[in-house]
Image (cartoon, rainbow, N blue to C red; front, side, top):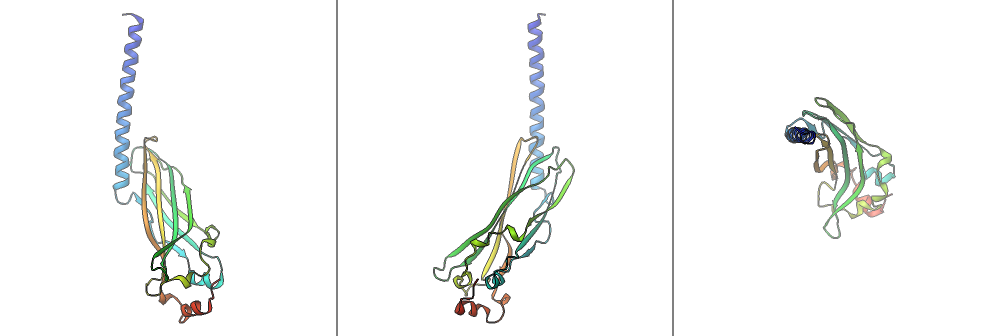
Length: 208
């Protein structure tokens, strides 16, 4: 058998086994990715109680910037390959009904994307997405916020979070993402305010 023919046979055999190996890898990665994302308990976001302090009334009265939000989470790699490029992006927004237009208003006062360590096969990662007082965009909150709110609606204000989890799996063969929209993390109701406080804000303009 000529040398060139032997080389062609060896090369063809190598390509065949390489293609077969990649196909098996792709199938296993796809199956594992679906299993991780669809099996309850593999991804918990949040994984427990969210710790938060967002008192918009106190802020409107004093201007003290002491907000915080701490979101616990965990994810378990129950698949065959490493979870990589894991990231969580959170957007916080204030929603209320405008008293003049009777239209819903949305104010975004935080957005950030954080990266987290890779998770090897069979391992579990537990962590916190931390938003400290200096991370918020306080300038986005109107000085006269409470004078704009429709008092016929309760709660008066909702603070909502949009959470976006993303990552890659199977040696980068699959990118995945999961979204949690309009997660309520804080509300201001009329019962939360001191008696007469809302009327004082409206009549005296005591906002910031």
